[in-house]
Length: 485
Ligand SMILES: *[C@@H]1O[C@H](CO)[C@@H](O)[C@H](O)[C@H]1NC(C)=O
Ligand SMILES: *[C@@H]1O[C@H](CO)[C@@H](O)[C@H](O)[C@H]1NC(C)=O
Ligand SMILES: *[C@@H]1O[C@H](CO)[C@@H](O)[C@H](O)[C@H]1NC(C)=O
Ligand SMILES: *[C@@H]1O[C@H](CO)[C@@H](O)[C@H](O)[C@H]1NC(C)=O
Ligand SMILES: *[C@@H]1O[C@H](CO)[C@@H](O)[C@H](O)[C@H]1NC(C)=O
Image 1 (tube, protein in one colour):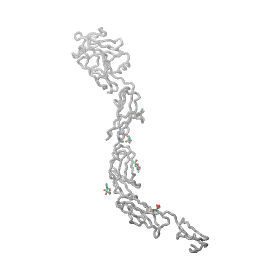
Image 2: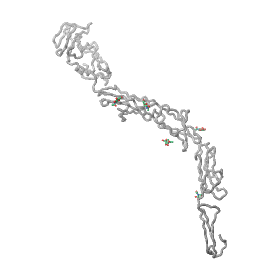
Image 3: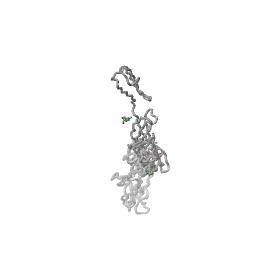
Image 4: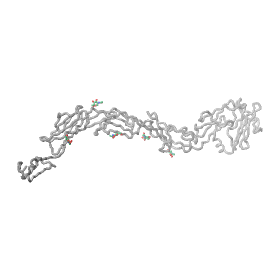
């Protein structure tokens, strides 16, 4: 107060506010009263610096959540401008007793009893300034951790499959490093998720993982065994054959020799197309068409699992329109037979294939299968000869051709040799008598007819029709069907 604090009315006075330190943002208020009156007797001078009281903040390194035996540092920070030297006070669990007066307090190693709620507070050394007390920060100290190792999609795989091993620690820290071990002899530091895109057999084994942070290791996870099977290669087979004729029944079959897989889901592909035309192990064309010809391959995927097979090699199915000629072989080779001597009939094609269905055709019954089985693979059909009174005419089974030589014999069942001297007849007229064989050289159409032979005592043979064909090529066509008569 200048010039003095005891004044008289009418005096002039100046009031000045001063502080002993220069703080930014401080406003000084000057008041000058020119003519003092009795009402001016009291002055209240407020001199203030309106800044917030700073608040202390606790931080914990490396983390609020640590393992037993880690080194943990608590730190108190106070954002107070112009204060160079704070005196810190640390409190635990709301206690009023100060356990440390340093800015940083370290537990090395930390024990479970160090867990708790920590707060700090600061006071300016040698001055009246104080901070607000910090919010409490909780330090958690865990016992040793054990990560969990999981395998996706499953631990049993085929070569070429993809697999992900996941190492999980039920504490969310950012700075984990993961250590992987395979078959207890190798260790590598990798990410928490270890993915192998295309597994090889050598990737199989016993895996374990553990995590590490600041030189501290978790325990090893329980081991997980990954088994890699060689991706099996399916085999396509075609029954009855890769080469078939139109209208035949053809079955494609996919066989996969997959270790430890109980059920496969099959996929069939034709001519390299990606569309699946069947999902069965066997695919049957009941009446195969020319358009069914092509290259077939199959593939398998484990039902309810993730294993897959490789794709099979393609197998080519060919479908032909016309069958090759077949021949009826009659043994003994003659049209007439003795009842006591067995007769064998067989149907042969040029390729000697055994896939023909033999059907029997007779004038009286027509066409029927040789056995009750739907498919009767080619084999000789043994049938007893039909009844003849001991004498037969030996004549060719197949039609004879113009220009050929025809030889006929008259045979008797009960004599050795069976050749008889007999009379030979054509269409009821005797054409040669008392001879063992009749030869007609240079056959012509006019030689066609019913022939038989007759022995005066032994009896007469049945009649046989001898047909003479003009052209050998027609003969082949006629033989396209195996007809037994
Ligand atoms: C400091 O504490 C006082 C009284 O408890 C409060 O009003 C003020 O908001 C606190 N300041 C901070 C920065 O928290
Ligand atoms: C499938 O087979 C081929 C050739 O045999 C082979 O190169 C490939 O690695 C196999 N793929 C898988 C997934 O096994
Ligand atoms: C591991 O995989 C899981 C599931 O796919 C995912 O949630 C997680 O983020 C992955 N972790 C890492 C470190 O990539
Ligand atoms: C985890 O590891 C520690 C030290 O390495 C060991 O003392 C403890 O027995 C292990 N715990 C389990 C569950 O394996
Ligand atoms: C089937 O494969 C063969 C070679 O293996 C090829 O020459 C032929 O063109 C293929 N057929 C079809 C219909 O793709």
